Image (cartoon, rainbow, N blue to C red; front, side, top):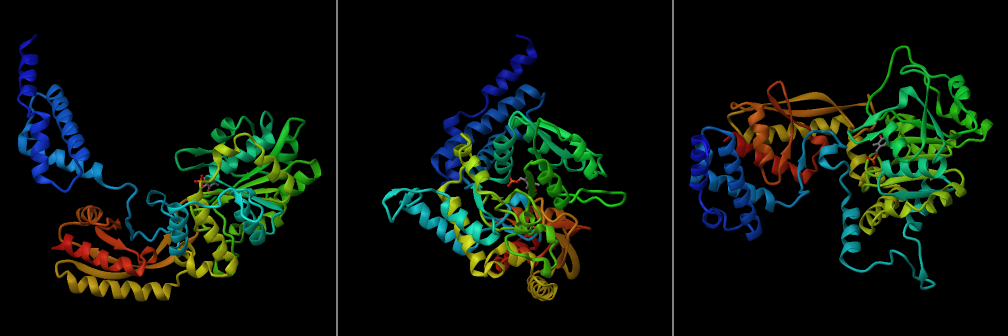
Length: 466
Ligand SMILES: *Cc1c(COP(=O)(O)O)cnc(C)c1O
């Protein structure tokens, strides 16, 4: 062995044993579970060994005290429940990293009830015979939308996949080049098509697609015409898009189903409240789409789900008998939350009781009042920071309502130690508080704060400013 290798192996041998390290972590954090302390100790030692092999110096990190601290930190991270609750002070209602739509308290109670006992998930109580797990949500979706039938699957990506695979496997699907979009890292229209076994036929250009482009691309191999909503960007300038009703006319003339991946749709018409008309999913059927797909945890404000509305009941039957439908099905917890959320829509109380809608529709006047009250309380508790209130704009987020700005009011906190450090401390609070950082200020938007969250925000800020 060369001398350097010998020195390194000696240094590795000087590291404490796993048992000793576990013991010391036990002393520091007796509150953590045994499995986490053991695993934290092993990971910390393995990191230290790797560092010795890699570096000439093992430095501070190899010392016992640093190892114990690192092991305890790893153990604490392992023991933390995940996903855990966080407070969203970003003002972004559908924040993908924060799990998109928060459920209404009533929907959460429905989940708990379904989770804690047996349910009639697949039982028809009247006859005692086998029942359909999604028949209740399908019925509610029909009543809300006027669709001939409806399906609910695991998410919208699954919904699009199921539609493509059922109606166009081995055939061609025509899409505008302006709509070959990526929604988050893993959902890209060309890739989902490939995985569903359909052949993509691109028409038009990035900025302009005409009805004649679709006409020319239709042939004996065409399975369906697909329109994909540009969920996370908008185009302006020299742009021509074929509208859904134009596409529906082409589909009807050629006997081809027209499918729209709407991405984020509402089940209540909020056009009068300022939302774009195209966001109202039932209206898309009326404009001639045969199938419309959208997420349950975007503008519907329910659990993760993919909702499929169809104009012809046979289309729903075909999708239900797709052998892979079972692999995409919703579990009883999501179904319970979805059922409650749809009932709230039917009752006419979605705008009040569904958090996503309440937050999106919050009036700037109310937000200003809440921002001023929160700023006053923060200012009174924290003498070291400069606290102000400003008007601002935010977005719905989560791949919905692109280019649609929501006028907001925010609290800006300028801590003496810098905004990034304060924001990092807020993320370590319990529960963690997520805020935006801009122009060296921590920016807190009351839009996404429930009233009971505000006391936590104040306390977390006070701790990081002291
Ligand atoms: C969000 C979105 C999807 C993916 O939906 P998930 O529910 O996240 O699977 C697909 N298409 C469009 C247009 C979207 O906006």
